[in-house]
Image (tube, rainbow, N blue to C red; front, side, top):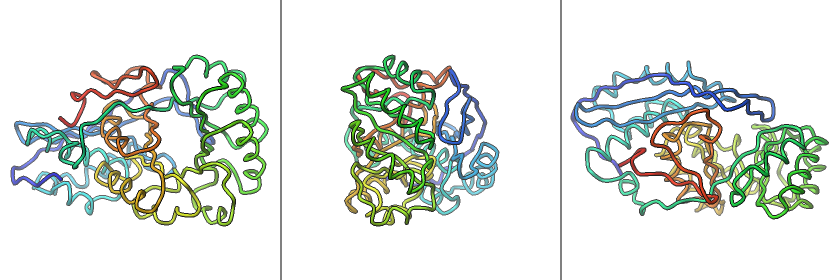
Length: 335
């Protein structure tokens, strides 16, 4: 892992906004842009970068992220390390931006890429889902045909049972051979979930993400899971991971939730020990967010790193999507 240097640092924080091609709808929310906190750590010679998108359902918006990062500017500039950061800030977008900036800076200082600092092998291209925002069934089916035919398809549901069934049926009809996963984003109750599950099985859906609201995990106790359940909003930090066993089959790691690559890697390794499968997701950042998540993806069964595909513009250089895969050039971050 990275080591602390005694050289003083300067921290630059700024807000950058990236509009979407078109509004993106999930259960209970419609998004039109991503507001990002960008952190740059400099030792006078090298600069490390990271960005955070925050966690909308926890109130971790851009103002909160900026305030949190600003609060720890002094200890960071006086020599606090990446390891110190884990206690200085709680999980969230601010710690993610700073944690990733520390990793990037250490890579530049040492001449060792982050994957090496993290005790991993060279990263490889990963098969990544492409996501369909919630819309009318016909529109979603049409949109599914416009996706890379080799990419897995992730489908956003809204919690409206009849509409969601129509969505899944329409997309499966349009894409009979595709890997399809659905994401309920907390939209169901245990009663309505019981009605949805047979349809998902009949339609050959590969997994169901976050069916119930955060805080209602105990409602899943004793429920037979006919397809893998994925914990997203129910799995924010490393401390949540053990409680997922018996209720979920997969943990979805997002660096904005857990507060950076340091904890994201720890969750992936702990989940494996607990017998859980591992997924990596994103909170709709740019390629600067995807690059550290791409390293977590090297440890994962399922990869959902399509955030930049929703943006009207991305950073350059950026990640590339082709042949159902995400390719992350080394020059983006961490080298």
